[in-house]
Length: 203
Image (cartoon, rainbow, N blue to C red):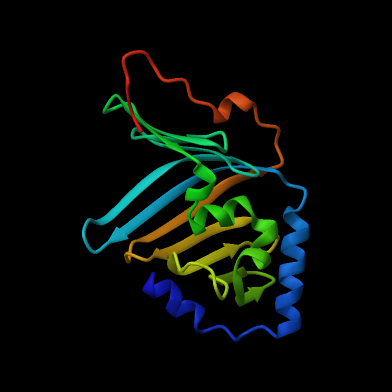
């Protein structure tokens, strides 16, 4: 994360007009794109647990439907109201109600790429026709401070490339996306979970 931030500092700051233009194009790009599918590599670093790297797939549908599948580990599935955290290895599933109230800043970004200017105080760190665009997002004045740093990286066509976040507990999470598919019709049952027989449900 430190190396990434150091590289960003080498770029000049875009003008205010250029920054507004980027955010206008971003809003237009995603305004009518209700779904997103992709593969991802997640790297997590914390002072307590060290570094962990995981791979998987994600499917999102606005406003709050999500399915995260981590290879050989666990799944996060929500229809927008109830979140199920399913661990086949442990034969246990956790149920979380009112999931919309629990979305982290990182998940808000992925669900609302067309609304980042409304949800966050946005600084355009760099924008380049070849390298793409990097946005730094911060809580707006008066909003709860739920994270320390949040960087959103987009390719030259404003397709999602990477999200880097440092939360309030100094946990650093980097999500690198590939094979992004936008606007595909996704079946409703992708975002529903049926508890397998004999599996313990933990509220």
